[in-house]
Image 1: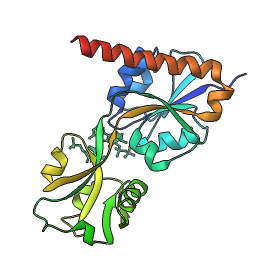
Image 2 (image 1 turned 180 degrees about the horizontal axis):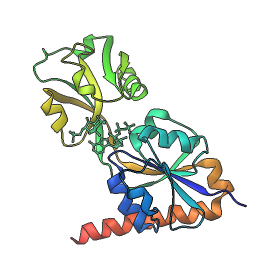
Image 3 (image 1 turned 90 degrees about the vertical axis):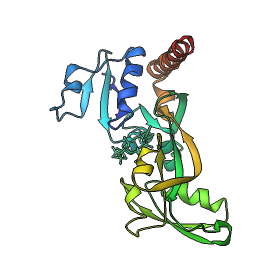
Length: 224
Ligand SMILES: Nc1ncnc2c1ncn2[C@@H]1O[C@H](COP(=O)(O)OP(=O)(O)OP(=O)(O)O)[C@@H](O)[C@H]1O
Ligand SMILES: O=P(O)(O)OC[C@H]1O[C@H](OP(=O)(O)OP(=O)(O)O)[C@H](O)[C@@H]1O
């Protein structure tokens, strides 16, 4: 018997935007998926031989890169931070828009960055942060946090942070201001490269359905 295709989706904030897209691509999770009290992590779908797993955003990339899941949805921030060569990202899903930015306290004394050779940064994205500063000839010492980066400057952990920004409300509420944008982000469909070859008959049409679902959404919003 052929093993099911496993589709990894992030349980964080991208999920709400991803579900309508999955539906337009013809994929509906079983009712258990929507039960708040459910402790299940793997769910059947209306598509024969397709299961969904709901995992943390960073873990979507890990499951798919290792071939434990064959396909998934994840932010381009996560793809770039890991840099897994096993991941193929064929479709920009046009959801989960945000940016990765540097932020500092609003009232911080101006600092001549070009004069600095070393900076300390609190972030969930040490690889992207180091690469960003390296391009400017600056060595970044990263303090890895998994959330609430915005607390770091006021508590003396680091002068600056590198974090995701969308509306800017979180920065503002914590007395921070964006000083540079490192990259623009949106969620992508990712596929394990080996699976894309070995299970092309199942995965290629699925990728095409997502491509079409994104186009339909764009057409609808253009017409509105
Ligand atoms: N403010 C935002 N606006 C739009 N998209 C965002 C925003 N913040 C994060 N994202 C996207 O959603 C993804 C998951 O972010 P989210 O904040 O839900 O994760 P998290 O809760 O920190 O993850 P985890 O489940 O690992 O704790 C990010 O990788 C990014 O692509
Ligand atoms: O610019 P804004 O619209 O305020 O969004 C930015 C916030 O969104 C993300 O966190 P999220 O709310 O997903 O929570 P997290 O701390 O669990 O990552 C990000 O880490 C910022 O804290």
